[in-house]
Length: 87
Image 1 (cartoon, rainbow, N blue to C red):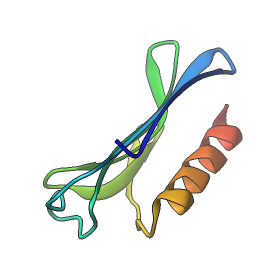
Image 2: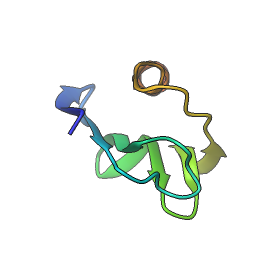
Image 3: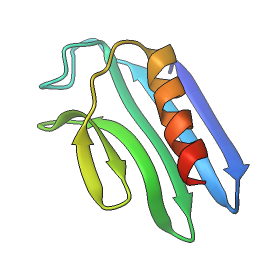
């Protein structure tokens, strides 16, 4: 595991989990599997993940958008920026 964090924020929970994998999760091309999520009142406000078959993407409210993964530091920065904006 590369990163594991769970924090309380604005009445919700921010959880970040990143694993190093031997084989990329298709169609992703990098060596990481990740799940970053901000949940409040049982609802996902923001989420970033790279689900098999979908690749790198993010959820903002009910919208699902493609996400361009470059590295873990940028991933965490982008996610926390969205959390801060929507918290």
